[in-house]
Image (cartoon, rainbow, N blue to C red; front, top):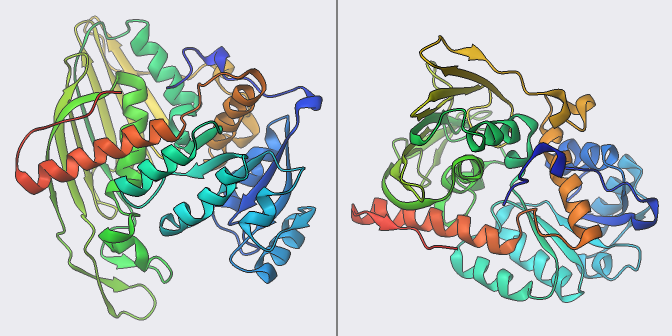
Length: 379
């Protein structure tokens, strides 16, 4: 579920309600936690990073020193057991999500886990069950980006009238002809960190936040490059993950939808999303190839007029200093998480939301395997 209007995204500003954060996976050498979570948390009032855990006690101490975090924990159990930690952020590779999320939930601490939630539906369902009675959040930050929220409001306010159809074509970046060292696990379908789960999952989540959920899907997927090249050594590396994902289907409101993600970075159209309605049209472009970060440009047309850019109003952006950075969408997600924790609301996507998104990916995979239309489970 996304905010109904831009003013619903607010900062947790009460200093007496500061949320103590412990990050699992922060590295002294950079990475997503350092590049996105830390600047986002620094920008949002009401959060304080108080401890870190990493792949080893030595790595945790190095990360704490490098980023000025007060404490380093030897394990996720130790971190989650700290009295000054209220929210445990799990920002590691997907295959380790389950083993790190479960101890944090067992300690009764709120947990924010990166997307995908886990490697497969069985693990996702286990985590949903373990989160009963505990606040949980999943890192699908694209829906909170200012431009994506503005796009949602345009549609909700009738800019295009009744939505008839939507078509999106984008690229997956990593799943192209070369792979950089350390990224080989992304090529293994069984490890759960693939083009289907990451860029397609993020893109589908942002799309559905604007237009509503899928009711059914028909999918074709393929691994067109069963071997790719190591960017440094030139050695051949096997790839079993899909590098072509074409999905069509019907949204709950009746609109026809189509998404095609292609591995690598095509030399033609990098990203194009069109929304066509009875009264107007919207066209969305992006330099990132998908909707992971919500960095988009919106054009619109009504009454037969030419497409013209629709600038996102400044009121949608609570953190203009982060504009253009991946941390921008993450900061807006944290702002809503802070409000949820302070007020008991349930706007930010939780583990149950993650299960629904994983069920959509499972429906895509089953349709691709059988060649049949597959209904997507309702909420």
